Image (spheres, rainbow, N blue to C red):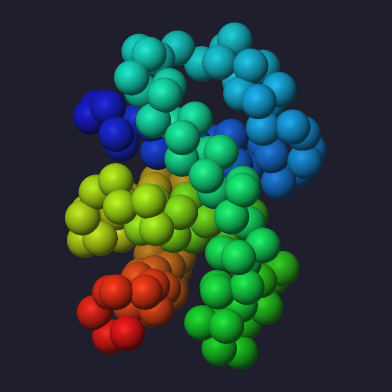
Length: 138
């Protein structure tokens, strides 16, 4: 599996744990990496995404809430919230082209979420990307 795809999976797993426990991100990473095996580059990218998403949770959640018409953020499945947080963080960081980030998020949804999630997440992520400063549609 590609380094970045595996990093995104690990970051999503850490985000899920963080949402449940609200532990200090560095402490959570330390515990997480005791049981998860990965190359150093995979770990570094996963940690970057996880820490970035946690740091931006209030901003990302506000954006998602504004883009999710007739749908409250707390009604989303935890894994879907995690996927949105992770992908929007990565879109902001610019670590990969938007199309790649969104496609990877949809692959995570296919693997870890419900059958309906990819379509919903695609719409929210496309709108989120277009709402970022300097992006198409802005």
